[in-house]
Image 1 (cartoon, rainbow, N blue to C red):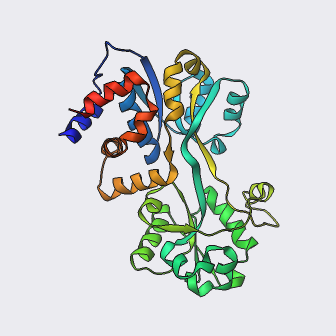
Image 2: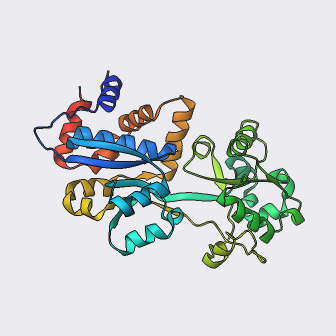
Image 3: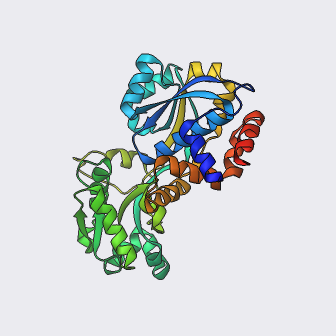
Length: 322
């Protein structure tokens, strides 16, 4: 019954305590990937049911969101903004004080790296460093599963493969044709408990579904990493992948005029690994975004209740006790 009520409330979004408080209209950008959609669904439910907001969800992506903020000063809220991918227009918004970065909505952020299955790392701990991998190519199957053409990670991984001389150390670089085949290769190896070595990132379904261990590539070198993003880098150097910040951004006007809601959004944060696990649950159960949000809300009340002010917490507790 609780699942039914929560799902119904999420679907129809009928405020439970409009007389108690009314936050007015709030527009939220919904990026076109699964984790962002879940963040928005959870936030929309809490805003509607807890704060009696009239929420408008605006389908978007990184570049359209930044353009809209620049030209129209909207939407009010942009969760899952990746500043590293947003370009100069985002930097200008920040420099001009038109936006406020409230929090890391995913903590520690977007993770990238080269990975092996944890069962392989437990059997051969030496494989948890790139030096150990290079010394034992057979233990990782003699293959590196690379990013598909056209992905930003492909250029970086290509340069790192040269920097570490993977092929000179007996490791074939296999360039996948799509993200689907890259994910499938990991799943197939994992299900058979076979070696697998390759690039992946999170939050994603595979990193939530499969227990993977990141191979240490050494220290992060900002200059080397920047140079490794150039496909024509003549002398690629080793560097770990940095963690990419993933933020909730609001307009300055929204931040100044809605302090309670700005405080709410400043607290809405998910662990990156937790989001990967939620995506894995969604995939395994063939669940919709709304069903994944319901699942999160039902199983993490102690966490999200701390995001709310006292009145909103009271409104939500009444609903969930029904």
